[in-house]
Length: 531
Image 1 (cartoon, rainbow, N blue to C red):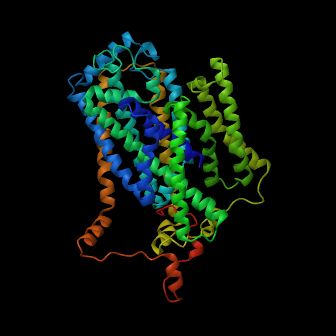
Image 2: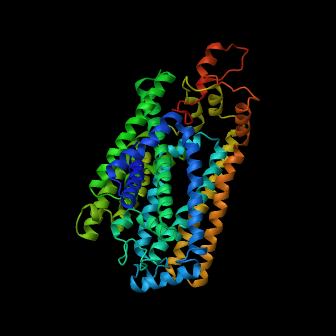
Image 3: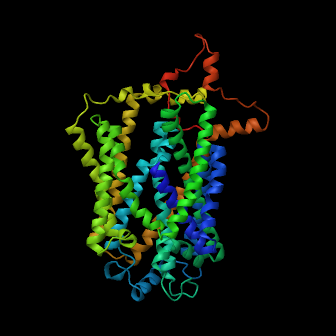
């Protein structure tokens, strides 16, 4: 639940501050109105609505990015070519040098950027592991489908910040001395940079007012889509892991739905209020992004070892991560004092103090968990084979949903083991390539992009973006073709609608001769249940 709070606050804060800067809208109004629309379709559609909204929002975002990228490098009257962008960035480096090698904006050798990158990677890495919205969507699909879905989804996601920054942030930088710059003749203030405004300024300079509007639409779509997933994640944890597990184990489907709706409503209001609080104390989205790893990093190895290490003990997972968080906060504050001479909001948001806190939080948890597990070992190692037998489905689950939660022949232990091996190999290979193999040699060699290298870099980004957009837009349609055909046949009257049979109704009507679902072998946690 803590993860849902932090992620939602970050998303809403970034969106609200962007709306306030570009449109003049009051932050409080934005903070309360933004969750309102999310609440409306989430409370009525549940997890299924997040799947649909995610696809629609992502399609629009890809279209906006593609239009901006190709306009910048092929059609814009102010830039219009890769070579022109290269020349403008060189000129900007002479008048307003960066913190990178020789003041260039075309180099990886930038210590500040390196540490900021580390903080962002650890923060994003931590949220993926600890955010229940990711696991719920993964569990709602088959194991193999979710595995390849996250691999291809990761590749498609990575190009979004890469392509967007290559056209918007670089445009804002290259056109710094153009009269169209909103901050002309000065550079964009650091405060606005922390709020993510250079992207919107760049779109304004390339596409005019329509570009700024498209940028705001993109921010709204990204914020609402992700916030909806956080609402679902929070309500599911409270409803099934707290209310049904400890307060009312015999809760009916109607009671579970009522609690879910209440959780979504309370969470939406609370997130709006927290966003207002963060804004008035001077917290920005950049500050939260670099802080996330300190708060959530200790949960990474807690989840990994729980799933893959049979010697993991309840004591180690209860004590280890909180202890690592305490140590990380101490390291974070001590580093701020050591590097910057004071402990306050500004110094705690600096890259070096955050880097220390993120490092300690991430790996401190691993050390504490392993140490506690060996110092106070369990009576016997955990048997993962008993996991499925501990699940019990709610009575509001349908027969089809209950069957889907069982581990069938197609998801046998052998198949799951093979998928796990493939997932680990591909994940580690992707991690090494993206985090070490590409950036580290560029950093160490103090390489500044040549004109030809910059051309190749942008062309690769363009190709990658087109392929990712095609995959994201058309592959889900292909995967859902059978459902689309069925919906079309029902709408046109060629096929009667199917009424799902609830598990409770099936249990009361079944006999020994009827094919029934074994309730004791299906899930207590129902990740795909609409609220």
